[in-house]
Length: 113
Ligand SMILES: [Zn+2]
Ligand SMILES: [Zn+2]
Image 1 (cartoon, rainbow, N blue to C red):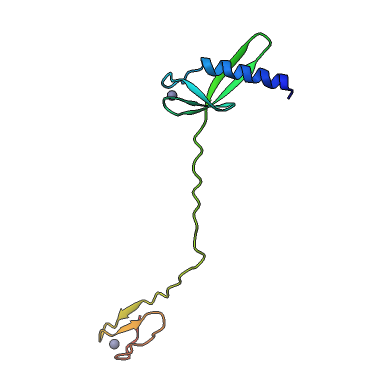
Image 2 (cartoon, rainbow, N blue to C red):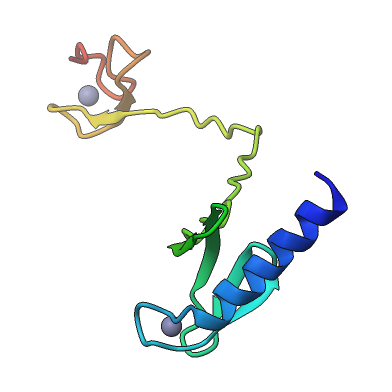
């Protein structure tokens, strides 16, 4: 882009900026950094999009979507493994037996189910 084009663009931008109003509250829009503008009242961010022809110039305010903050989940690689031991009381004597490994009750010798 040539200096002249850039100067033109700059002039167009300034003109559009002056004439633009926030569609939400009719507030003035201020330049952040061409082509970004911000509403003076509600702080909504817009892009001032300009289409300029030889004799005409059109522009519009395009609301910038608020970029979602990037939430990074840091997950620990460390996995805590717990052995789950299910103990069941013997139906004859009430002794707790390990369901997974005990075949017979350690108290009375009855079969563990
Ligand atoms: Zn506004
Ligand atoms: Zn038992």
